[in-house]
Length: 128
Image 1 (cartoon, rainbow, N blue to C red):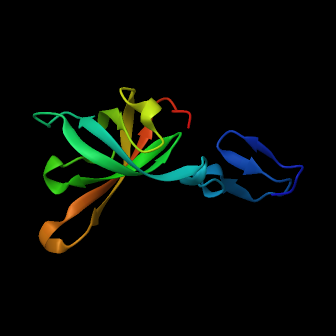
Image 2 (image 1 turned 90 degrees about the vertical axis):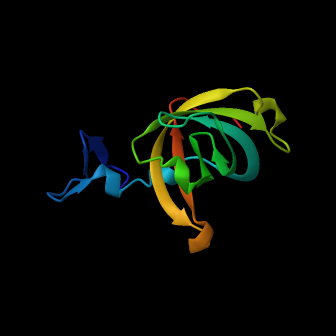
């Protein structure tokens, strides 16, 4: 797109007759700075009998990535609540919570002990 381009509705208009969907122009997963961090948290979601204690491995203002036991069976689109325990350099987040939506899941690790990698997007950002 040229500098004179403008966004209109869900399409980018660049002065030509070609229409490109906006989602093709923006990689939303990379819209905020990521921090590689081990951040303890508790995950609460429908179907879990009790809060699940896990570590986030990747954190940004808009979400996080964590490895979860396969048995928790989170699915894309599912809502959950995250309560942070804190971590090295992120102690100030201890006790804070955010509601989030599961936006991505993928199998990770050894097939015998497979876990699920899950990307969660927060409803409201955390400021790092």
